[in-house]
Image 1 (cartoon, rainbow, N blue to C red):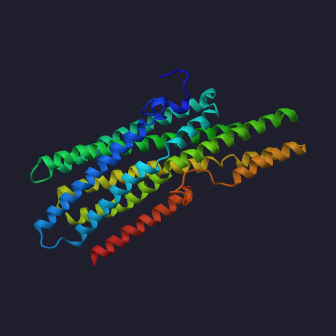
Image 2: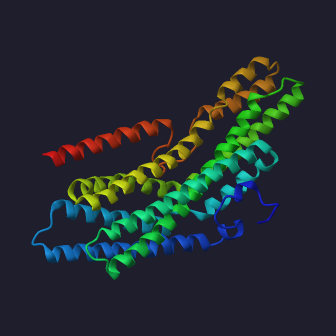
Image 3: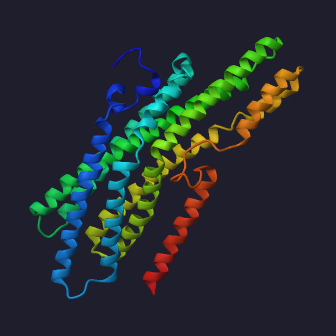
Length: 349
């Protein structure tokens, strides 16, 4: 790895030149697009075999396979057409201008959070593969069909975690960039007017670069993030039905699937929400700085900075429909409990 490479680009699974080429796009098209279509075909084959063996499949079986088809086909479309890799390249260019490498604390924080990210993604990927193997073992006969399905599932998990790993890394860099600016504001020195004006403008310029970078990151990932939450809810419904309706060994596999889905969704959500939260943490410091500003140009510069922070519109969105902020967690939990109660009531009746 190039020692002169920015800290922003050192956390990717591939080197920067390869990440800004067409390679990651084609990698996603193969792993999540092409293999996703194969997986969808395997599900359809399995459903047809159920139709041929039963006079009339249950409603749950039909709904389950309909959800599988929707999830797979929508992901194929999104990774093929909706991931904006040009926006990703622009993100790296914009955030590199913030020069996080010059701040030792920022570099340490990024490296520390990246170690957690690498550990989390590696453990989760291995866990999903092991659960798939466990599910395979519970089948009455281990046939070539199930072994091929395991191979396809493994490729799909690798593709998914490649994107999750990348999106979380974007969040880490953005969080640290905003925290660095907030730290500058918290330790703002009251000196001569010219020095203070220069420092305020410098921090506002860094904040503007970070916001531009966050917009490009959001543009890159917005549709995949929307798909991720939709598939989480849909597959949670399927898992609950499978847990309540299948034999004990098989249902245990779906319990594990659901548990790791919740953990992964929680980890991604915390990182997405943190970008929005940390982007406005400097408001109080900016307000207090205004007490010691004696000149109009200083007040004007401070007010421009303060007004931009008060917009509170920085961060990732759900397919550009609404902002993923702290309120999003409350809505997410409320919706999850509502769905769970609805399913429990429906199955009970």
